[in-house]
Length: 527
Ligand code: HEM
Ligand SMILES: [Ca+2]
Image 1 (cartoon, rainbow, N blue to C red):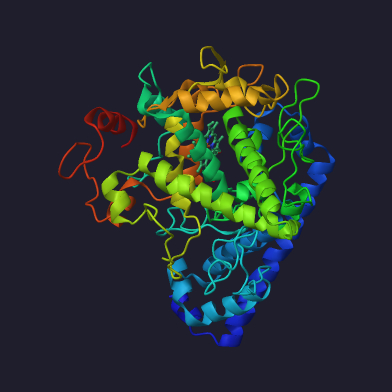
Image 2 (tube, rainbow, N blue to C red):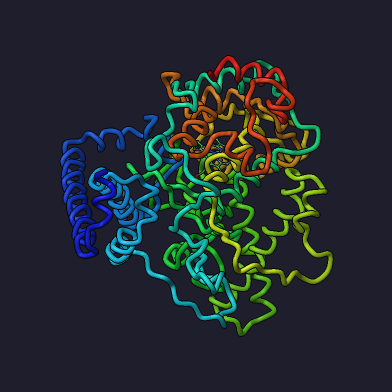
């Protein structure tokens, strides 16, 4: 039909067609931006931003856009790519797969889109001693892989309803998917069943969130469904130091390799105050990652690493008097990164993977010396299934409270977790000594069990405001996966070499790794 005819047009014809759709889409983008500008001037978006207790602003604190200019530029290009693809599909009558395989369109597309791509491939000096701030040049074969502000990747095709950018709304049966909140209520509500772990302290949760912020930071990108990562994908303490030279310089003291720290030993104030300041003297803290103020326990982790940096730098400078600020800073940073990696591999991962898998995948550190293993053809960039789903599993480890434990571990004072979100007043209490109290809690009280139950403090009362309205973290997780086109359960089973589940039963042909009571719930939820 039409598709076949069109495939025979000349290359210059194809080139012109691609050019036209891109030009047209550029014009549409300019128009949309003009509308946005007018809305902002008239206060529609502005009103949301100004009222700091609104849900919208709470949510944007968690999925915050760090470098608006950079993210906007990249999002615009991504938006144009998506919209122009849709236009080409309707213009040519070809399917997405046919277009992708068509040599003429592919070539015309590459030439024109690549030309306007704002991303430069970094050039690398293989002799430098230290990691770059943004993670580039770690892999000399592919210098931008894993760098900040590059794309997240997929393990398999996306599962958008239209294969391009439409969030998943329809199940395989053609019926609408159940509401995320309903799933959360039926499967993840504790009903008093959420038990403390018998093996692990709150620190396993808190250190987990801390290192998650080292490797993942998905910005809110309007209209574009293929997220980028604002963090470096490497475990390189970018949540401590930032992801570019400018960020690092802002956080550094400029002498002796030290980082800025207040006289009370706390992180310095941020010039972007995205936290809730309630008491006089409250201030939002600045670290390499903007999420530092989310809960007191997380602020503790940032403070620990900051103090440890300055402690090491002071010592290194003492024994290497000739080293300048830069040298002391970089040598210290290198040690801090090694410490963090050591804890991840030898202490955190074994709380998640059993001995068999730790050994099978060679995850333990060497007992002596260091490992020289490096796989340059391994793509280290964060996978969307990881940021959007798998790495969120420790949400089940979150306790309902954030607690202070006194110096002799005798008294404990609980604050409901929902009362602490984004409020630095908790750690600032008592001239910052409350930080120690929260730290003692992290290492002396249990995290919650790794099960399907999630405490009400984040499942019912996330960002609860004065009117008692709130979010549900688990419903957000489920919804986010649908928005990001993360493939459904059976796709992952196939990818892992298992048969897909065909019936709501346990055993052959059904679910094999989910308890029968949960399978019954799924049978009620899904067609
Ligand atoms: C105090 C405890 C925690 C709270 C209040 C919290 C809250 C949140 C919120 C509100 C989001 C954004 C949800 C969305 O709209 O998609 C989020 C995302 C996420 N959380 Fe948590 N979380 C906590 C602990 C953890 C822990 C312990 C881990 C893992 C070790 C974790 C892993 C993640 C990941 C991977 C994301 C996606 C981040 C991104 O793509 O930028 N969280 N969390
Ligand atoms: Ca990193």
